[in-house]
Length: 198
Image (cartoon, rainbow, N blue to C red):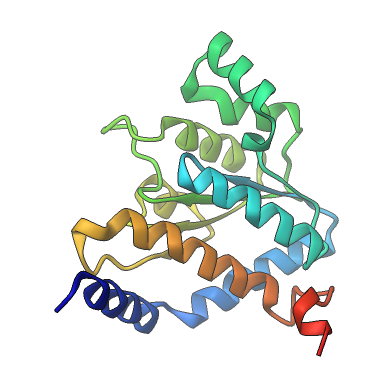
């Protein structure tokens, strides 16, 4: 079997193991955030930061949900990292945004954050703040879900079907899942361009 065949076979396995009921629960939570005038903050690091930026566009444009990603402001991100440290960069940004009980936090991450292993401590600090402030928490994460899976109201854990491909599958399926969310009839309010030009 070629690597391409193996990778695509793994992709099909992951699709078959995702839980549609959890996706529906996440959509309901997001619809409730929009209904109560809350905002969605999307956090990710590395490839997940790029996904966060794309997701913000989709949630704003397609779902009409006020949405932001702190990694979209490079000046503030680097200033906070330089002056205050990497581990608090997201929590401090969320404090400046006055995150509250109307809002929601969406974590995009391969591991979900783990203080014991010192992996993505900035996500853990942000999650702790969100819970303290009463915000809803969602996650699309890989591996065992890490700290995100422990505290989130709804978490979609991307199944690990090959430990050597955890990162590429986790990051790819972040996009699959958030596109499901914004395409869902309960969230989608704006027609996407290519579907409107028949």
